[in-house]
Image (cartoon, rainbow over all chains, first blue to last red; front, side, top):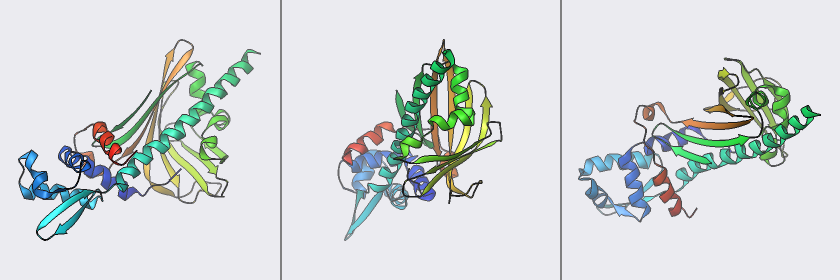
Length: 114
Length: 161
């Protein structure tokens, strides 16, 4: 099983805790976008969107590319994958343990009947 | 029957399984070291072997599961029992030791996660519901719970999963 760094995961989950930030990520999952495009669907001020983007940036979920005055945002896959990996590793671990428990309980009960 | 829930507070893995055995026996399989070491995890860790099991299933009691991988590295899980309610409920913390190769309890490496197991009797069968949770930071713990499985799903597609 993989051991994870606490801080990186904490930052990822904290960043994902906000519905607006999750919508921004969904938006970016469709393709790169610039800050003004991201602000439009939420009738949000640019500073407000920028604040959310900074949280996502510090969690390593998005990356900012500057092209003159236009800042383009794109999605960074690694932290999300780490969160998914945590779940998948433990799912596999517990499922396999349960398979063995199932077997063991059968053996145990057969033994008791004898 | 599995669900993966990510919320504003934490990530949560839930697995449900029905065992063809009475509830008392299934509960015992979790709380008696001699039973426990017969089935717990070892095979799941790619040829790893369970070296030692210490288990004191009382509220405040501790457990230590020492697993040694073929490459010599130790994965030693330790935790404290938070709730022990035979034969229906078991709650314990879950963390890895930093080194894990010793014979006694060693220094723990964060993060600590939480495992809750519910045992439900259905005649001679037992439904077991395991919940394994990783809590986010204190900052995000104050927020409201927000399911975002759908969001994760679409992001998963994006990552080519």
